[in-house]
Length: 324
Image 1 (cartoon, helix red, strand yellow):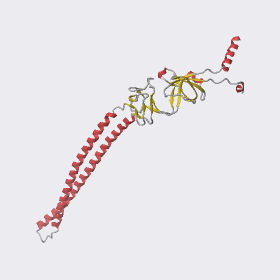
Image 2: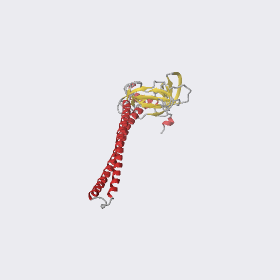
Image 3: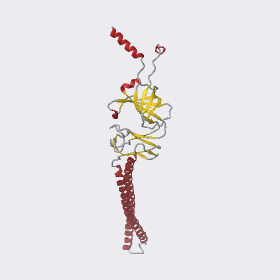
Image 4: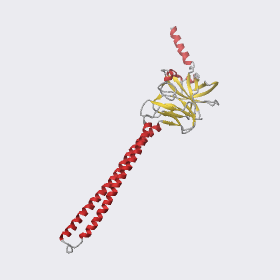
């Protein structure tokens, strides 16, 4: 009986005692920072071939990160050479066909001249010349007429051959140009360009947990860092799964900056992720991400500063609040 009373007393004391404060680890983040996302690629994972050193200031339009574009970079000059060679070959073939078309046109002119002469001879009355000459003139007119029709067909065929060769050449050049543009687009999309002036801050590798840098392997679309301007700051903290129950949106917190000892700032929890996620650099635990809005301050904060967040326990409810 005594043990039962002791247990109920302990439970009652726990219910009336204020909740213990939760201490979290986090870092300062810029609200308006540009996210540096690893470019998409046909392969996975990808290797970062170029990355602006952390802390270096960049201007808008500068390349801050570039991944390995694979064979696309080497294919561009090859395709440019193939386009030049195809255009030269097309010009040569078209010129030869145009010469044949000119020859066919000259042959048609000669045949039409012969036809005109044959028509003139064929108009001579039969009583003015011998029957043999008359028949010869009529036969020459038939032959010249057929010759003109044949030369016209040859000329039309030569002109069609010129047009077809030009179209085939343009189609081949267009095909090579599209391939070159495709690989050029892959090379361009393999780069991340700064869309604002700011400072580059490297992120953590989701695969290894270490800092992202040149030579790192990562997954396409993953966050590689940020370009931080001079905008507002907030804090991103992480809470282990067991600590989630002691946190609530709107809860006030005290924030301590490792780089600025003795200068604390108050804040409040603005957002708590719906599901925990792993952070390989911290071990096998699962963490909820928490966004914290900073109160008024004049501290020289920089993105990436490590912070400690201590929650302010909610006050014990009064008897009036406990009443139904």
